[in-house]
Image 1 (cartoon, one colour):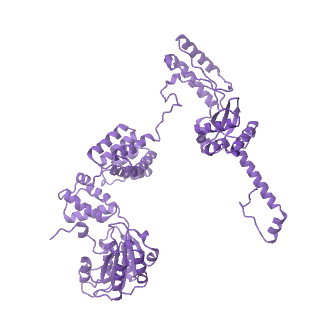
Image 2 (cartoon, one colour):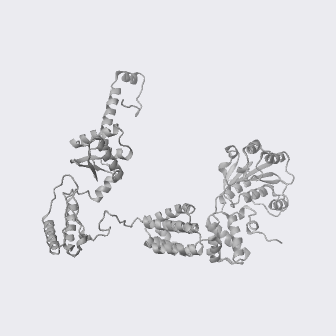
Image 3 (cartoon, helix red, strand yellow):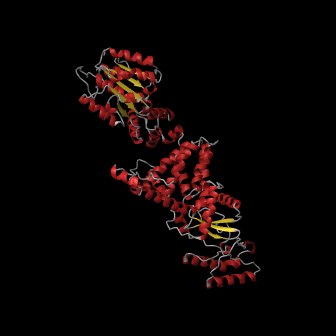
Length: 616
């Protein structure tokens, strides 16, 4: 006798043997028990979830006479009568299966419908089962609509499809629709365990868990992969063999990668990626396994109680809990997102392992808790802290002045040990200078530093008065929300508003440059330098400043623009907004006070729709 594959050998013969589709089984069983039977059923779902199996069980339930031949419609077909055996073997004359993928034309459908005029030969009902019904042509669908809506009382239609969106709504409205869901890996694992126990095939639980995940919710795929694994392992299923067959990555590599990413160890990340390349393991499988582990980590971080619910069936639960405790939740979410979207980048790169390495290193580049080096920060840029000159001007907050004073005093004490070539002399920008308030402690520290440097032949660091920026907290608040301070007009504000409106009317500036001009406040004017203030740092772009300087030059203002971040109390945009609101109020008052409008509102109960009045 030839070997029968597991997917066919263990196909369910009745509703009790159905796995993972309890919602469909319950509805059909209740309908058969009460004999409230519809004339057309539509089963939808992905491949291998039981659409054809349910249709055959339904056909047996409708036509099963029982072992003694005296039974009626039942939700539990006997499986031993001639009708049940013939339906299982595909020889029942009153049960017709049509594959719409290869018989999709109107002629095939009309040939099937011609049989509808004849009563059943052996059973109680004729059952027409059309698989992959979405493949039928529009003409074929139209040909079956009338019969599908009002079939003879002895005829039942069963339609199955993996793509119900392609089925016309005229067909959907004539059928009872049941959606067969993809099966959970735990359900597939439990069924595989029972099947292999019946087959007396030794198998490791972790190997079956890999097969259950690889099935993607399809029981038929799970059984087919199990057949392949049995052949690959020569009658036994072990985790290493199943991993090699599926090409999946060992969880040990995944845990090592996540551990290295949590610690910021780029060397281990690159070395592990090279190991995956050397062993020929799938890069896509690596990212898939990582997303699975990261999802479990995120759940444990959100619900800490879940970390202590491991029942010992999953050997990876303890390691997952350890990683969840070692990585911050925001990094877990970021890494999950990078791995998820990185799978789409593997096919774009010339080498998928190089793409995998780039996806993994991306977390180190965008690490939330990592500090970025910038040339604007002398200490992080590599300059010794003791040679950094901190300049104090009249500060808005005494806390800022005290912090700056302490920093300068600390630098003065250590300046003698610094090499002469690291001394930094800052050039003063052109324009007017602001007065410097120098506390007594700062003056003594500066004098001590100058004397020490002079004794060693080292030029002293020159402190240049500059405008002190707002503290970081104030700058962050200014970026997050616009200022709600009232408009405070000034002579510079009048001049800046007239200048900007000339540029806007002449269309000399556009896009971001116009936004910078409208949202800024002219704080100070010098002969060759203007100081602007904006609330959002995104407006302070070098390209926008250069374009605005060039536009001002066309009006005869050959000046250099300096932009700072802070609260804006007078800007062209604010003035324009207030002017527009005033004109809107004046227009509304003029309409409401018009005698004709008042008479219409009084005599005809008319009303003015809010928001429809516009000043001309």
